[in-house]
Image (tube, rainbow, N blue to C red; front, side, top):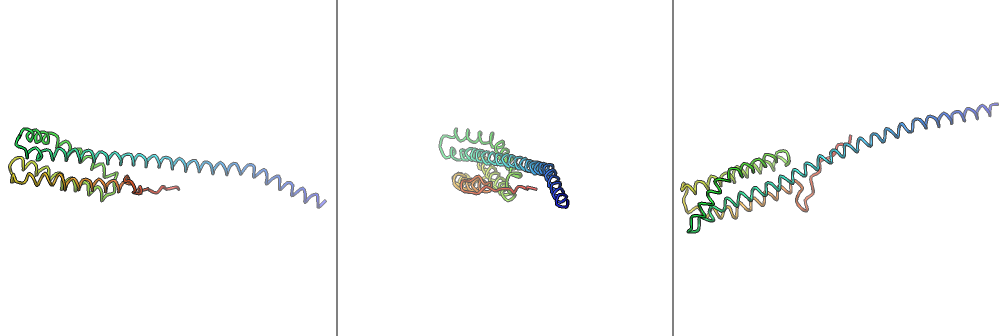
Length: 197
């Protein structure tokens, strides 16, 4: 009888264990799957957010490139046409500059303001300094040259500065911006860590 009771006890224990396992295992697996699904959703949302940031950074870089070179072309046209005896083209270039420069400078500044949220702080400061110290000072210098407030012999130097120095500064600035954003070939993209809690 003791063997039979012992056997019965083991069979009952086995059945109870199997029953509990049959009930508990699906609950545990369900919870694990639910947690995995939540983690995957968080990961996908973060990935989509990062993609939107990268898209905005690409748009910022492209807009700044386009606007800076558009402005410089407008800026250099004035001293370029002034060097020729036919002053009509100079007057047209100056009028075109006076008409479009304010809006272009405003658009450039708006893009720099966007960079506050899309670039590291030092890059935003560099962009802001470039705008304030280089672009705005050249704008003022051009107007003073055109109004005769500065020595007319300054025109060739102004043109050379815009064509050589400012062009190099612009290329270097765009290059550093692309590198900081991880948008330069050969540069590793900055990756924000994903919190997987």
